[in-house]
Amino acid sequence: SYYTARGIAFSSPAALVLHFPLTVLHVLRILESKGRVSLDPGTEVRIHLIGTAQELDQRLAFKELSHVLPGVTLRFAFIGHEISPEYHLKRFSCADDKISIVAYSGVYNTFVPEGCCGVTNPHLIMGLNSGLGAYP
Image (cartoon, rainbow, N blue to C red; front, side, top):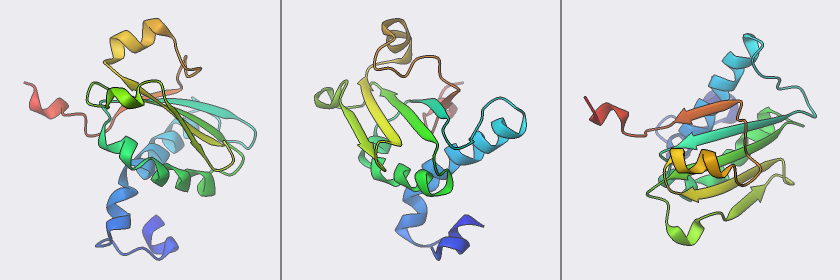
């Protein structure tokens, strides 16, 4: 699998950090196989990650996606009420701006109406470890 190809042991901390970006990659590939999104070089894909906090601290791990999706521009919105207000509407980028992230400190239903940050009309909305299992 991916970890083996990159020479990363499953017990490595890197494997844990890469879990979220690789989950996004897996879902994008499923969507591509169904014709819902293009991952061809030169395309832009917009992704909303809901309920994020720790993912923002691990944002550089998302740079790994630029290696497996060369030429694809990924625009992320990390949205969560646990994101520190000091990061609210702050932009981060890496991989020569092929990966960009905007942080939104708040809940999704306030993010969407604002239509802020140039990450509107997402191709994918995901809740990674968002705690949905804690609610009956």
